[in-house]
Length: 156
Image 1 (spheres, one colour):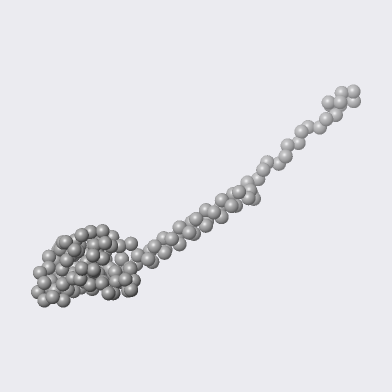
Image 2 (image 1 turned 180 degrees about the horizontal axis):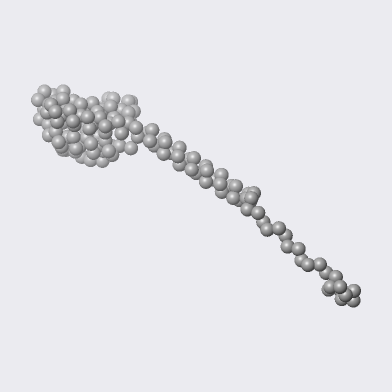
């Protein structure tokens, strides 16, 4: 070291320690909390929707059973009775007893058309559901099964 040279008396520059990745900054913590909240909300929504649509899955399973029974016994009146009962129970579960229980005849058919986004109940083969208790009502079974299945799948 040269005492006459003031630059020789300076020390080397000391760099700070590199910034550690842990603990993260507050912004990363907030982002993690928001992502966890969104994930929990999404899972809750999926569970809620699954529970809310349980009636629809059950009704579609029962329709499969009704179809299988019909293929064995070919009794049109029993098919009509079972399908009418299935429609009424499903509608009461979905829309509530107060709104559905008093519907009959044209009102019932109009309700089914409106909620199924169709005109098959008032103008097509689904019209026979209003004649549930009439003896020897002619039934187009395959078409009626199709109309009921379409109505069930359109419920939410």
